Structure formats: structure tokens, C-alpha cells
Length: 111
Image: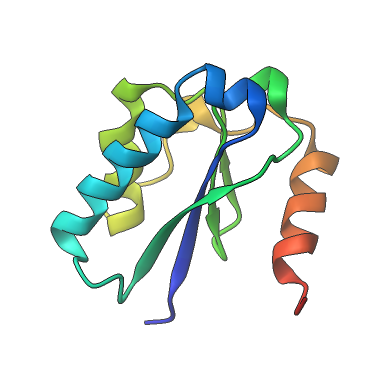
């Protein structure tokens, strides 16, 4: 299985909304089933540009953009990452499609 990346925004607005704590909780849950990061890496991202919909989290290369994430959403995101069910619908489709496309283009870039 190819390695996947999950990014948690650490831009100013998302940080003020608690993205640091969400990052820690998500990383800890994912490490329970992938302790050596062989299938998924959880990382911080400077800013996705969808600040009004924060906290934002992305899953790549799956191209899932979760928005308005709260602590209560972390278990369902971790389950989705693990392959147990679909992306939580109430977290997707909130930001403008062009914002998502810019993020995917940047992540697709070899640079």
C-alpha cells in the first residue's frame, strides 16, 4: 500500500481554533493502528486558505478535504483513514472547489 499523508492546518485561524490539539489527538489515534507510519503520515500544513471553514484537515492522495473539524470528529476521521467507512459527509464540501484544487495541485507537484 502506498504511503498516504494527512495534513492538519496550522494557519493562524485554525491554530486559534485548536488545530494543535486536534493534530495531537489524530496522530495518537492513527499511531494505534500504524505506529511506524508505514501506511499514513500525519503532518502539519502551513495554511490551506480556507480559513473561514477551519479547522481544516486533508487526506492525500485520496483528495479528501475535511472542514470545520472539531475534537468530536477526530475518531471518525481516524476511522476513515484506517479504511473503516467513508469520509464523514458533514465535514466535506464546505470550502470552494478551486481552493481544494489549488491544494491538490500543490501536493501533486514534484516540488
